[in-house]
Every structure is written in C-alpha cells, then in structure tokens.
Image (cartoon, rainbow over all chains, first blue to last red):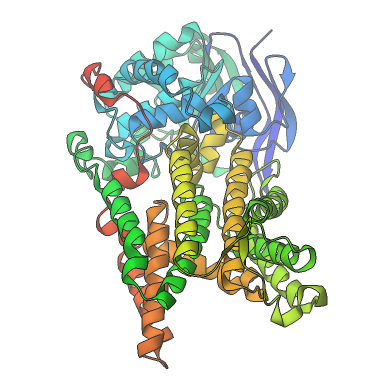
Length: 244
Length: 367
C-alpha cells in the first residue's frame, strides 16, 4: 500500500487549467522527484497534496486515509510536512526558537503555558541544529543566516515533528553548487524514517537523490517511473530538448 | 499554456527565492545579541518604583487621576496581549471593558452588590464570556479568518454595544448608570485616593507578571509564530485558530477586570466606555509605547494620559492638535514605539530556549 496516493487531481484558476487529472504515488521511504517545465503544474500539485490549495477535483489519500478535505493542521498531525518554496523561517526568532516552535507544535496547551516540555525538547533541538550544521549559530536571529542556511533551517523545521512524508518545494533554489551538494548529503539520512516528494529545477540534484520521478507537462503526467526509466523516455527527452 | 514551451529554468532565475541575498549579516553577531540583555527589567523596575512613590508626591486630586491611568494601563495590557503578541487586530477591546463596567454597575444598582470579592470576579467573568462569544464567532473557523474580517467584526461589536447602551432605557440610555456606590471589603469602603490607587497598582503588577510569564513561556513562542506567520505554524500542526481564540479570551478577561475597577472608581458608567473611541484610544496607548513589550503598553498609557492632562490644562483650545502631532511623530519615526529607544529587537522579541551556554558548547562548525 503506498504512503501517498493522489489521483485525478485537477485545479482550475478561472480560465486557466493548472492541473488536469494529475496523479502521484509515493511509497514508504521513497524519494520521489516531481519535475517538468515551468508552468507544468508541479508546485500546484504539491500545494494540493499539502493542503495549501484545494483541488477542484480528485482525491488525496495518505496512510490509507482520504485527506482531500483536511486542513493543513490536520495534515501535519497525520504526519505530513511541507517546506514552502519561499523561505518562511521566522526571521526575528533565534534558530533555536525556530526549531523549538516546530518541535512543540503538538504539545498540549497546558504543557505550553507551563513550559513543561522546554527542557525535554532541548536535546532534540540541538540534535536537529547539529544535523543541519547550524548548531554554532543556535542563538542568532534567523534573519542573520545566509539564504542557503535559511533553507536548511527550514528543512530542519519541517522535519522536526518527525513526519512520515516531507514535501520540499525547490529546496536548492538560490543555493551555490557547494550548498546544493551539502543539501543532498543532509537529506540522505532521513530516508530511514521518512518519504520525500521534491520539486526541483536542478535535474542533476534530482537524479542524485531520487528513487523515482514523475514528469508533468501542461498539467498532466507525462511519465512516471524510476530515474533510469525516465532518462530513457523519448517524450521526456523531447520536452527537455525543446527548451534549447 | 505557454509555460510548457519555456526553458526549464535554472534555480538562479527564480525571482522570489533570491531575496535571501539581502538578509545576511544585517544583524549583530550572536555574541553581542545577548550582551545588552538587562534593559527590560531595569525599565520595568523604574516604572514600578515611580508608580510606588507617586501618591506621596502628588496632590490628592492627582492621585485620583493616577488611579484612573493605572486602570487604563491594565486595559492597555489586555490589548497588547491580543495585538502585540498574537497579532489579532482587535478594534473592539472597549466592548469587554465596557460590558464588565455596565455589568458590575447593574449588580451594584439592582442587587446592592459592592463587595470587591464579588465585583472583581463578576467583571472578569463578563469580560471572559463576552470575548469567548465574540472570539469564537470571529476566529474559530475551519480556516483562518482574514484580518479585515476580524478587525471589522470587533469594531462592529464595539460600535453596536455603544448604540445598544445608548438606546436602552434599562442601561440608562445616553446618561449611563450614575452614582455607583464605593467598592467594599466587609465594612471597609474603597474611596478614591491612595488606598484605591495602591489596590489597582497591586492588581496591575500581578496581572503584568502573569502576562509576562505567559508571553515568555512556550505558549508565548507559539504566539510569536502566530504573529509572524500564521499559515506557517498551521503547517507545523498548531491549531492556530484555537490559540488565537484563547489569547483573545485572556485579553477580554483582563479588559473586564479593568472595566469593573474603572466603573467603581469613576462612580458611573456611560456608553462611551463600550464604544469605538475608547477602543481606538487603547490602540494608541500601545502603538505609542511600543506593542509586544507589555511595559510599552503601560508607558504609552501613562504618557498619553499625562500629556493630554497637562496640555488640556495649559492649552485649552489647541491641545488635541498638539497631542495628535506628537502621536504622529512617534508613529512615523519610532514605529515600534517609545520603548524601542532603549530596547533592542532581540530583547523585545525575547528568547524562549533554555540552557544557552550548554547549547553553545555542543555547536559544530558550519560547512
């Protein structure tokens, strides 16, 4: 049984059909890349899965539950997590507090008011920061980080609640080559407990870390399969060659 | 869709993700961030010290005025929680203040209840109930309510209550309810003056400390997230609307407490206490002093009330203009309020993590 199954997803904005019966299936511990030309509907599909947008038609199942009508909060509580395309760390808070904010999301009101989980979560906060190579800046404001570091912080925040599925919208956007390489390294270990859907323009990056790919074109699925299958696919080659 | 024929853009071409370039290195490094950490307690201590000696240096009629200001500061505190900390644009905070004032005035008039042990709980309960009802309606949707909906909803609530009170004979219409007897404790009567002053000051200090505890707790961290990016924290799994409704109700409760103290101090209640003018006044107190700092709300109230009092005595005709210009200047040049003159951003926002030293030691070098 797949972890995530989205079927027949359509999304219409006025006269524009952004998605036209798209589908996405992701298994346990699978890194799944979502690629396609600009305007092919990758981000919209991601938003429909994450709950940031409601699909016009279609159904999204997660861990055998129909979550199509779930709010973002309900999806997060079911084990799904999203990193937005636009960096949305909380700039005035310290890195430490950004992570703590993500970690304590499902604590009870009572625990929050009395700060009863603050001590308990300390080690987890530091583990996350160390894992993402940000520990020495734990008490800086997030606004003082470089763009690449903000992206890492945000991935760390998205992973804090130990989700079963992480949705990453362009994680390496605006990063240097070196930062991209490190991002790939940082993502590898999470495979043990988490699946990943990743929207990305950098095809080398996608090829290196993903197990399977889904290619979208004009709101429809053009092809879906392993990286090798997609690379050998004639119609995929055609849409990527057309750009030249 | 023309987009399909476009090139697969390389990352650098995305306009909205590159914005991070401008951000780094704009702030002081971490070591300095924690250096100037002691300003807030000093400001708070000074304000308390001044408040404690005031009745000894002021003439009696000024002590009465100071009591009124302390009660209004309590009211401002309630708004700062709701707006400064949770980012809820409540333009109707006077609704809870006035509703509690009217409620306790009716208790005194119709049931002869004047005991402080009944009046203050009754006032807070009225504030709590009213804010739970209005907050539940405005904030507890399945999806977050828009800022416009909440601000117009609260504004309308306040305006409607004002009109209702003006037109309702039982509530005294335009004149309100006059001649409320003094607050009592057993056979003791709280008259205007130093005793009433110290009583409300004590209540302000206790409520202030409770608020401070709340906003520095993990709940306060959740509020900071709510204020900065409500959508983001919903994606973490926070029940953002519940958090908002809770803090709105806490604010309403404090406003209710302030309203009941105000009614008994002034000896009468009138429709303005519920209305839009009062609701906006409290916005100005907090804006002027500095929102999201608690002490800013207190300082803003004291300065605006103090300056209006002095101006209206000395410049009888043009004082509102002078006050208006003064307010504009502060808001234009100090958008974070007067306390931002001495309080840095790091200290204003606060830090919620524990054991910073231990955290520093376990740090690793960035790549």
